[in-house]
Amino acid sequence: MRKLTFALWTGGYLSLALIVALLLWRTGATPAVGLSAFIGALGLCFAFHGLISQTFMGGALRLEIETVREAHAILLDQIEKVDARVTDLVESVAQDAQRRSEALSTEVHQLEDLIQQMNDRLEHQLSHQVAAASARHTSLGRERAPHASHMLQVVQDALAENRVDLYLQPIVSLPQRRTVFYESFSRLRDEAGRVMMPAEYLAVAEPEGLMTAIDNLLLFRCVQIVRRLAKQDRKVGIFCNISLASLGDETFFPQFLEFMQGNKDLAGAVIFELGQAAFERRGPVEARHMARLASLGFSFSLDKVNDLDLDFQDLARADVKYLKVGAQMMLDQLEEQDGKLVITSLPDLNASDFAALTRRYGIEVIVEKVEAEKQIAEILDLDIGYGQGHLFGEPRAIRDAVLAEAEPPQDFIRGALRRRAVGW
Image (cartoon, rainbow, N blue to C red; front, top):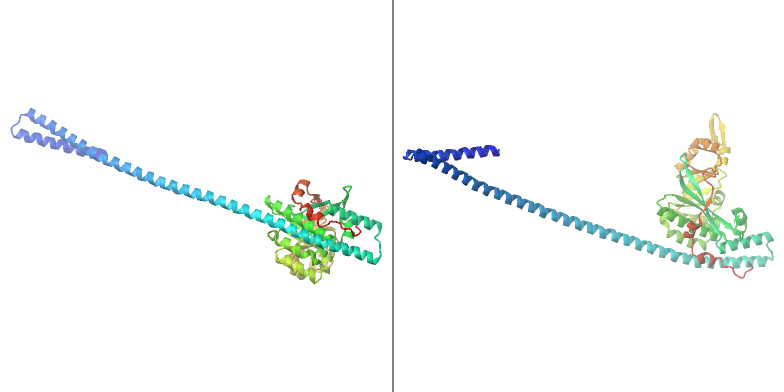
């Protein structure tokens, strides 16, 4: 397009110079004069064209410069806006971090205050229990058997000196065998470091009202372990055993409930467990206390099941969400009738439908005490979703370094279990 324009302008200039030369020639000028006039006119035309072109080029250049300036101004404006947004974002993140830090600090202080309150109440409660036990034994004029008296002393010393270990055993999903829960166990050690099994110390701990202290300590550690796992972004739950004595203790339970109220954000991760016999023996007080825990979002598990003919509606009303059945007990209940596999205590139900029946009431079956692979092959045919036992992992003590982080203050234990001059 520019070449065509230039050709047209050149043609026009040539024509104008030729006209000037012809006019001079017709007025009587010599050919030399006409040629000079032609060349001069042509030069003037190109000079004029140069001026016009320069003027237009200068205007175009100024326009381009102005456009660049406007674009630069727009870019600066956008940079300022982005900088302002980044500044606001940094301030917002800093404020949010500060708020979270303050919230965490507040929670820690509340937990410390609650622990101190529990310490005071438990000390008061156990002091009365110790005095009552001493008075009872004195009034009856009976002496404990030497072995029982010695074992009671060992239990008292183990609690007072915090020789209580926390053990965890994995509960896995089937058939994947991925750990989704842990069951917690408490184990006491004597002065020599020997681990005592529950069968040894429960016989003396329960009659003397010491189970509430053991439950309290186990619960505290379970809560701290769950919080530690949550920090590691590990979404697992812990089954924490609770005795019927603790559920029925009108003095202990209010402080127990207060502690759980302060940790109700863990409702989906802490499951309270009690045996089938204890569950069936529960009275109005225990049932009411279970309902209060359930109102905070906590659920329950039933273990030590010896009869599968259960009242599932009653279990659902009590917020029982898990049912633990021994592997061998379950397999011993299976028998073939009229060409189908049934459970002896539920002859009208196909064995493979048992887990589906419990799920209709919101209850998951966990087969426990799994010891051999051959048991798993039969259990998988029953559509049971979870397993527990030595085949998947034995109970293991929590490392000392980890347990130290989950320890309550020493006065929480020693103060609560301070021995009195009452014959112990």
